Image (cartoon, rainbow, N blue to C red; front, side, top):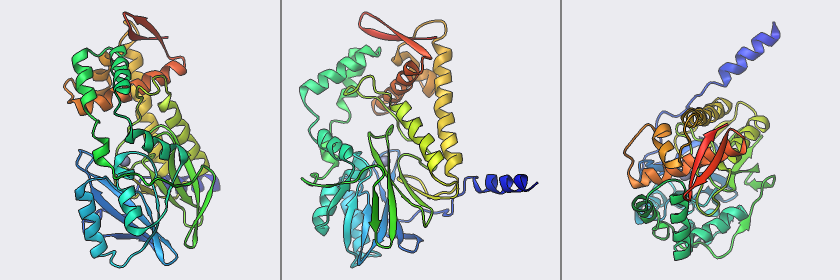
Length: 354
Ligand SMILES: [Zn+2]
């Protein structure tokens, strides 16, 4: 009888809850708990914002993620540092991963506050890689990758033309950084955070967990309402990024308690981490099931599978680029799991359900 009562308490505690109905406005910061502040900067995409967190750190604050590297983000920070954050000193910048909405203003923040940058080694080097990626050889490798997955020259060219402006979206990366690695303990003010890293969305994304306050900064690994992009790119055509992502989700489920407050990189803070993780894993399994059905009788290319999974026949090049990358992540995962086999004809890959 006790067991029953306990499990019902636990299951209601595992329900998704969002303690804040409203996100901070452009001239506001929200106190999540004493010594933890939440700010939100606009992004020029359909995903239209990124969350930034500030953690009390002695006589100043540690900043987690910097925002997108454009003039609007600099103006937004200026508004905050002249308003609710007036006189605030940033002691250090921790960047969770190399995507431009998170690392974009790292150079600007560290220069303005003369503070150090903390990142995982892989994410720092990945940022360096992205800053230098526009070479002709890499474009050719990317083109061949798209053709191999069933796209025509025209579509490949359209996809190649996007994403070439990474440099315009980031300030110059600081030339040195402090490495943080999975399992490290980082003391920030009076709190001790365990560093957890995970793959899938980025190569080695940093998350921070404070056991005493049951506080989990999940970066983009576990988002409150959307499913983080999990893709494969030409630089590592056989990467099992979905396998890495699901592995990371499973390990978060087993290592963290169920009642942590989650502070994600996009969306709003929430409770119900394990419920959310289950939803995300189920979402990917559903996509795998659709792919398996479509490849049961006739082998299919990744290009042909995009509308099967994304239920949309016209995607603009930006959407198509992400959709193709996500699709290939599912296909690669299913190959590793033995759920698909691949065959090549005329240089084009096709997949068949086993
Ligand atoms: Zn992000």
